[in-house]
Image (cartoon, rainbow, N blue to C red; front, side, top):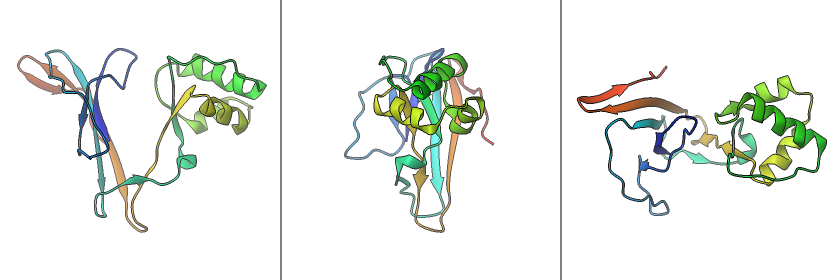
Length: 153
């Protein structure tokens, strides 16, 4: 899980901070600057603290990949992508909202994912019987200190 800077309509910016550095992850060095906005991601668990992705088929939250274009073949795929572009052009959305508003099948979603038109937000798992919580907060960096814009539940 990483903390990212944010801009208008961009929630995963190019400046990243690793919350828990790992050998397989690398980010470029960057300095915090005045008037920047960051999304602080925190993941906690009742287990040993090593939440992991088990199966990406469990994902229920997606985001449109703004820089990817592809001509979809299936009508259901085009319908789903059209709904995403109208209702959720740059923000994450839950699958239930998309499928409730559209009569298209999940097959359309699969084609959109295969061609990189949508990004899936993974579900994090811990050992059986353990709980995982993902908390996100938005912070604005000001000259006289930081200001938390959103609060956690």
